[in-house]
Image (cartoon, rainbow, N blue to C red; front, top):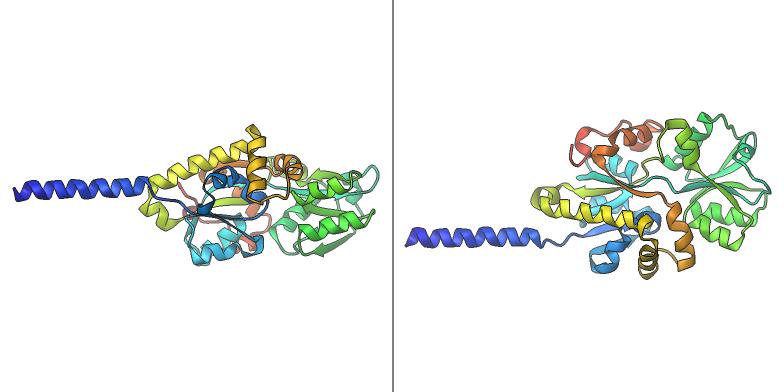
Length: 302
């Protein structure tokens, strides 16, 4: 009888653990703006499980480790992981470059940058490093390079100075073009592809906490499937993502969202598949990745 009761209690306990794992609620954090769009379809359904923060504070999400998943610049996640300040592994790449060279100049072409003056945002960041490396590989050499703090700052310059050539980002670019239709823009990804052969650089990634991988492996796998579907909707079901982005206040209105989302290069690729491309991006400026390409254990699934 004791053995029977013991077996029953063991079975009940095992079932309870299984049910608990099956119904584990995943929490995710992302910087507001383009990267957040990759999870917009999921967040709209259960907003209480998603946190959107200012882009310049996203690194704190790795340190406080409150979320199971974090979307962040891949170089930031790699650097913190290498320093031992983060246990988050890269699970997937979700954005591939939302940067654009833009100007009000009549008949503006990329060749106008050669021996001209340009304004980038984020001095000594991976974005500016990729922009300059891509120009160099395409034999485009600006005479003067200025820097402003962020894409919003270069957007303001783009609108106020008819002769300025700037690097900006979506959705700031779309907002500027709505205000001034004379603006012409070219994706940095065009230059990057000519330089490397790849369709975009590994910009933002979806990171997963090591503890969650260990304790809730099935929940991790399930969430990654859902995240892949959410990313796919940015091209296959744009109206639903527009609706979600506006409802969640990721983007200001439907007009901006409809134009900006297709230009944000949102595409899901598992970390294992994207490893070579991550390393290609890292080798452009290794100091942005902590001085070395990420180790194999940085990648979920490796």
